[in-house]
Amino acid sequence: VNTQPSIGVRADARPTLTWRDRLDAWRWRHRHRVVAYTILTPMLIYFVLFTWVPIVVLAYFSLNEYNVVQWPPDFVGLKNYIQIFTDPYYHNVARVTVTIAGITLVMNMVIGMAVALLLNEKIKGRGIFRTIWYMPVVISGAVMAQTLAIFLYPSSSGVFNSLLGLIGQAPVIWTQSTFWMPVWVILFSVWRGVGGVVIFFLAGLQSIDPILYEAARVDGANRRQSFLNVTLPQMAPITLFVFVTQCVGALQIWEAPLVLTFGGPDNSTRTMVYSLYSDAFGNLTMGLATAQSVVLLIVLMGLSAFNLRVFRVKY
Amino acid sequence: MRRSIWINLAIYPILIVSSVVILYPLAFMLLATFTSEAQYYRTSFFPIPDFFDFRNYVPILIDCTQGCIYQSMLTTSLREIWYLLWMLVVSTLGGYVFARLSFPGKNALFLFFLSGLMVPPILTMLPVYIMMARWPLVGDNDIFGQGGHGFVNSWPALFMLGMVDVLALFLIKQNYEMIPADYEEAALVDGAGTFTIITRVYLPMLRPALTAMSLLVFIGIWNDYLGPLIYVGGNKDITPIALAVQRLIYQYTQRQASTLADFPLIFGATTLMSLPPVIVYFALQRYIVQGLVGVGIKG
Image (cartoon, rainbow over all chains, first blue to last red; front, side, top):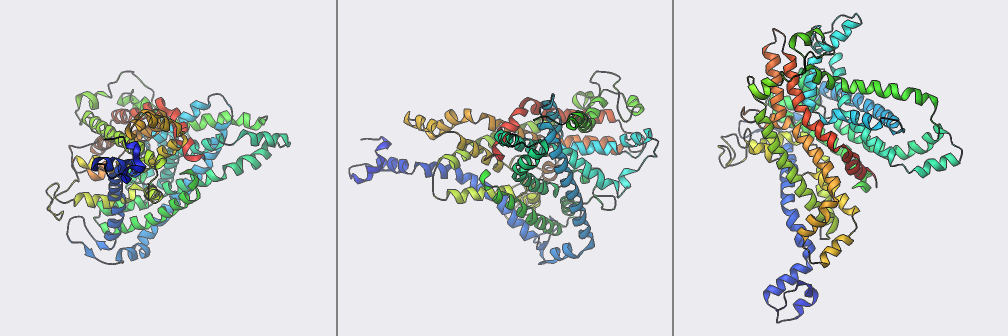
């Protein structure tokens, strides 16, 4: 009996073949889908269970009042959403989230682009600077936020206060200032996030075809003109991509608010992700927390969907 | 093209000043571990070391008077191995399937996995927590998921989430597509099976991209704080490194709130926690641009 699978196509035309041959032939003809479905089925089940089932669960609990323990949860319809959209407390959360995210985003983009342009010049020590700029990204945000908390110590032994002392200023009680804490949250997020932006922009700058610059030079363009007419238009797509990605990231800031002041003082750093965390595990109001998650999820998925759609080529 | 004098003049001052700002907290952290308490308070905005031994690391590494960091490092290392393995398996197999095979429903399935990139894990944290807490027949739960704690505060909670890394899957798939199919055809002619083809033919060529993804996974797991805090935060015996260091800092600062805390010891802990990712990053940084950004953005 010929068990070579390569007889494939003509196999089932011959009645003398055993079931074993038929099976082999079938497997050979469908080898792609056999392999594909074998590999993908467990992955798919896992993916659905831990990515899409949670979203359904999320949507369900946002229509309920639930304190994690009592069962069944109380169905309250849209009450949680109404509270989120009408309660001034949650208006404040939204305002804080958008303000902190917006300023962080702008600073990340501007500084990131500027530094990437500088690092794209052929200068000595470029590699070292690049290494330095990316370093905050690899270190734990929670730990660095804790370090910042130590720097912000109110007494004169706090780092920033002793720096103030150097220029003859009185110590500031940072953690009680509704002006300074959002500022520190923003500065912390920029410090931590800008390295990633630099890396993306650098990759973009380095993938611009040198021929374009050459052509500009031949046409008599000076440095400024070739920057305006070659670099900027070539960088437009990646800038949009980084902008949207950073937007998604900036709307999820939670480390510094949690570690520094637990959203305080006076809720001035209560960002949405921190707010839903504290609603869920501090106040045990799972319904409100999940409703906030749903609102934020819709915004973020919209942004990411835009990104995936526009940059479809990439994937 | 000639650089203008302005740029030449500005470039180094700007780069150096900004690098100082970036490095300041890190240098502070490291130097503070080589100071005594008294010296630390004397030079509070930039600690000047007064000895160069590791006495500030001893309490957390060897004495374990305030809790030990060993077990946490071991716990986190186990997670690292586990998640690195799954990332490698899932992305090489899945990437192969989507890049090299043709089967009905391929595009739809691919887009479906792609949708995973749109869902920030931090926002599915609450429902996943509820699911794990109410998992039937686990951790004293009855068949309806009531009465016990489910997976929450137990070991599986640290290992059961995020095993399918969608981002890695896509980047590796992208890398597969850049490899000419000739290699695979040659191996097929020689009678190699799918598994042999993936491990012997493709794996060596995917090494840069896989290294880049491993770096990301390593750093992500090492620094993972919110996940452990929520899923095992109530169990004092299970403390991944980020959680352990955070608790240590908390103990040191909160308990001694009346007096001043022993900051050099605290910075010893944070330095220890920061070292592994920094070392791995230094060793593998060239792959970041090469294997990751290069593939993700071009094209």
